[in-house]
Length: 435
Image (tube, rainbow, N blue to C red; front, side, top):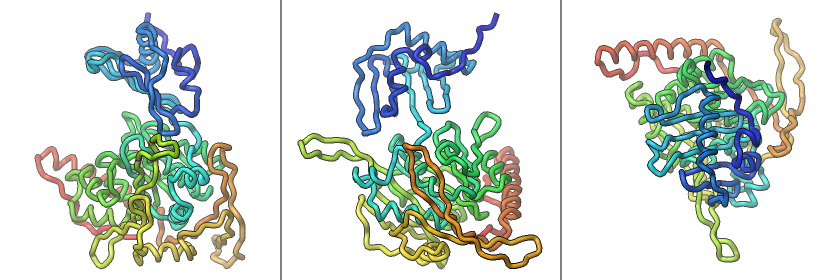
């Protein structure tokens, strides 16, 4: 008789001695290296626990996780993965981890740990730079958050995505639930797509374009899906994503390496500078306290703006090594701020009044309606109002999205055919889509 599958539930019975750390919101990561238990917390501190995990518990816990995902765990299948709405669990067999069976539990809670007050107080980001990134969202710019693994890229993206107006549809695309957009932004028009063996990133992006999105959030750009992400941005859909790099000026090279030979290098580079507007680099560093001790802190190290002008690709840093530079915004970026009626990008008012012109089917003029958009937030999340941005589209966005979705399917089919013939694919000869 087959063993009945268990349901992963966050309870003392399931997690045993790990439960106290699972229920502690200040703990972000729980790692067992086969000998000792290590903890990471919201203060960026990492330290060993005084608890020991008995071998009997490690074996029983592994069996419970394996039952939940209906997978075997042995030498021929040495990696076991499972997840809940807030946890991502990875277990590595002792045949592959010579130090002993390894367990990693990463927590992603449905609230934003970052707050404006906390960021300013802790030296994460200044008030002016926070205002700048909020205004980038209001000006409908595409943002990339970069840094090393575990530095808090998604956490930063979650905070600034909360300034997207509620009526603008947001589609999130993730393999593991980390953004929690609908929970963080109750009442927002949002759809959360989940990556699985049937729905990969490429298919999810193409599906997203058919769901009438205003914003497309890709949890992490890792491979060839970056090409389809850029194609989506070319339709006028705005978005955010994260990737691994140690300098915002390396973002184009990183994306081109991920794309491989799916697109011609020159054309892809031009698209990156045309459709990626802002890159934010997050780092960790040691800071000396008043008592002489050192603590590890996170901070925004760089903010850069990409643009393509007069057939030249450029990047301007307005923040470098955590300090403002004397560089001015490029003209194309100034234009985007102006179109969003943002006079000073470094200034942001808590509540703004905006106007929207409503049009009916008879094309008759109707009065402009003044209103203020507000949204209740999670008590531990951001509790600030936001305003609707101006619709700057000058073309039929839905038609263009459908067109690009069809192009993506054709590109993928042609790539597969040419790959079978042993030919190198460098892109189709057709007009590039422009904004």
